[in-house]
Image 1 (tube, rainbow, N blue to C red):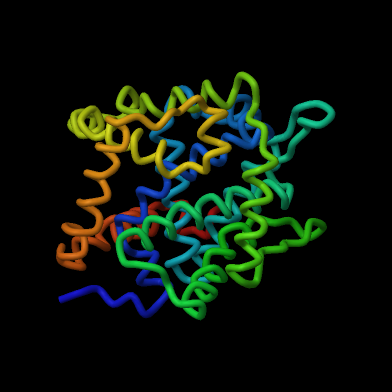
Image 2: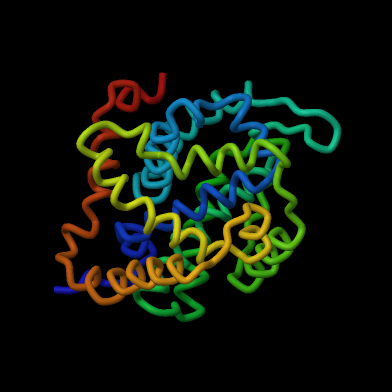
Length: 274
C-alpha cells in the first residue's frame, strides 16, 4: 500500500525528506549573519546533533501538530531568539529579524521538497503552491509584530527569491566553513550505536550534499564534484527512487510520528511552554 501524496501533510511526513536537512543546514550557515549567530550563540560546535534534533522537532510540530502545539513551541523558540543578537555593521544580526527567518524557512522548504521530488517526481502547480504555503508557517510563527512576514505566495515567486539569494550570498570567511566542518563530522557528536550508522553514512551524505548544493554555494565551500562523489550520490539516488517508495508507509512516516510524540510527552510542552 502506497502512502498517498495528495495532501501537503502527507508529503511532509515522508521520512526521506529529512535528507533535505543536510542541504538546508549548509545553506543556512552559508548566510554570513546566520553563520556568525550560530557560532556566537548556539551549541552547534559542541553538540551539532542536539541543534539538528531541536530544529527537526520544531519543523514537525509546527507543520504537523495542532495550531496550539505550534504556538506553544514557537513561544519557547522566540524566547531564546530574543538574546540572539550581535555582529557589527553589515554583519549585525538578530535571530528574530524576518529576513533571516525567511532564509531559514526557505532552506528547510527547498531541502525537503527537492528530495521529495527526486523520489516521487515533480509536483503539479496546485500541490506545489499548497505545500509552499504550509511550509510558510515555520517562520510565520516566529515573527514579531513589528516585523511583517512576507513568505512567497507561489512557487514561481519562491524560485525567484531563491535564485536571487543563492547568487548574492557570500559565505562568512571563517565561520561558515568551520560550521561546515563540524557538520560533516557529526558522527563525533551522536551517541552509540548511532555513531556507527553515521560513520558509514557520512560519505554518502557528504556526496549528496555536494551534488545538491547550488553551484555558487558549493564553490564557496570548496566542495568539488568528483567521480567518487557522483558515484556515491548515484547510490543515494537509487535507494531513494527504487527502494524507499516500496517501504511500508508506517515506516516512512515513523520519524515524524516519533518526534511529534516525544515533543508532546515533555512536561514543559504539556504546560503550555511555561
